[in-house]
Length: 514
Image (cartoon, rainbow, N blue to C red; front, side, top):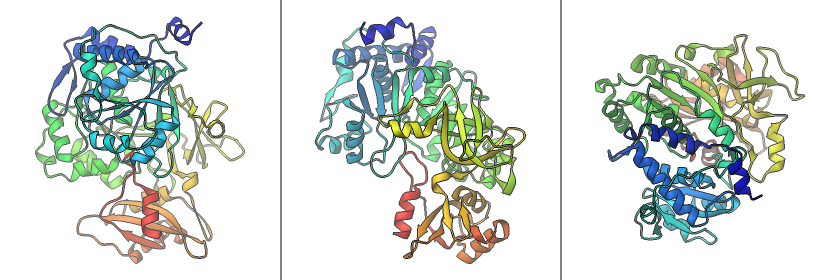
């Protein structure tokens, strides 16, 4: 029996079919509103997916093949991902900010046979296609370098298709945000992803109107799928610009959006905030980096009780949620909680011997859920190291309190070994963010000429402030002890970000200590 028949005979319905079924039930509903203001109905979106899926299948895209997306926040990007998955392929997104040479290595590593490019990434595509070994490319619209596959698909009938994948097939390989070499490829299966779509987010709207102002290649894409599946509408912006985000929330009556904490701070600091009607906004999900308690309090005052913090990893998806009111909950040493386990998620804190630790004791955070990864792409040894006995070993140090709230201390591998003990960067960052002169910060270790490690702090000062090393050291010593006091303070205008939008600790270390 062929692979295709065995998948179809299983009766499994993937996430694309599930979303398209919902759109078919309300064909006139506005499904996607583009950055240019174009409203695409459920029926229009569905038919575009069917036509492109048929066109891709006719060109050899099917189960077991890999389609790579070099796309921005466009309707064409969503149609392309849905169509490739519907035809049976796995998809891989190339992240903005990644060099063309790294993109080429990523595509080679995942056995990519086709590259799809939208109108937001033409310049990068032209650079990429000059490199050796890059697979054939098709453009999602007119371009000067590749055939327009959407024009070819337009002549096809919008014929339903599906049933070409099984629950254990990969729907995507999602890469971690490395800055050198090839990032790790994380295999996510159709079955696990399909199970997560129905999870209802508190206060996201009924129906939800989700604003995607961060990359669809990351969490914004997952929240987009959840929104469409749950009968909502998705508003697309090309990227994050605080004034445009505020205007879009008011204009489109947005109920929900996702932001990294530094982006949330930009909204709070924008002069249009006070005169923007944000009454429709009932949920702001944030996460990905440490958040400043003072800034969260400011956000609650400005936006109301709409903040929902998420802690998670690509390997395990979302793990915990801290809802309104939880942002004030602190543990030992003033740690802010990252919340309690989401439905279906189990959390255990274990020591290096695998013993489960009682409440209050620090150890590695380990997670088990229906939504976690299948493993790393072509890295069985790393998979066996991280995925053991059905648990994801997150590499994070944390503890649970008696009520099940989780507190993250740091990453195991980012621990700084200093004379006299260990310093956890995230723990020190949390403390520094409570200093009135510190707007943003990153803590990292740097070695001197004798290979002794020292604590460095890169700080973006608040407006009009210029803290000194002595001031910061005294502040930390008083509250945390001399062990945690930074040996070096670097005042910077902004923090460099990785392709995933998180502070780039490696680049800071290289720039400031190299």
